[in-house]
Each structure stands twice: as C-alpha cells, then as structure tokens.
Image (cartoon, rainbow, N blue to C red; front, side, top):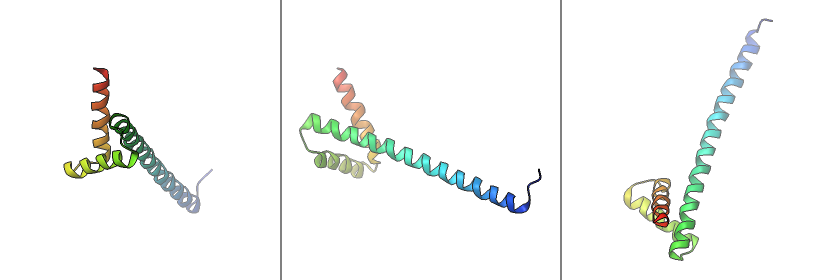
Length: 88
C-alpha cells in the first residue's frame, strides 16, 4: 500500500511529536533525579546538623552560588562526603 503525500506529512508530524515527547520525558526524568539528589542531601544535612529543611536547602543554595556550581553538583558532593564519613 502506497503512502500518499497527506499520509506522509501526517507521519512526519507524528514522528516529530514523538521525538519532542521523548526529549521532554528525558528532561523530566533528569529533573526527578536532580530533585531526589537535592532532597537526599537536604535530609542528610538535617540529620547531621539538626537544622530544618529550609536551613539545609539554604546551605546547598549558598554553597552553589558561592562556588558557581549547580545545586545538584553540591548535593552530590554532600551526599558523597557524608556517606564516606558514615562508612568510617
């Protein structure tokens, strides 16, 4: 069965929409991982220091700004360091 021009255009639009949705899904998955990491670091800071969630998040934000890094990068370092301390 031959595909006519209208069907071909429709298929092209569907392919483009699928590609856009796949890209959006990758972005959302990345954001979820980032938020989880920041949440984990926040919780660890709260447990270690006794501060509340806002204070712990503030620590991450301030360090991020001070060092010109993303919050996710700072959170990864915090969790890595605190895991290392807990192992020793």
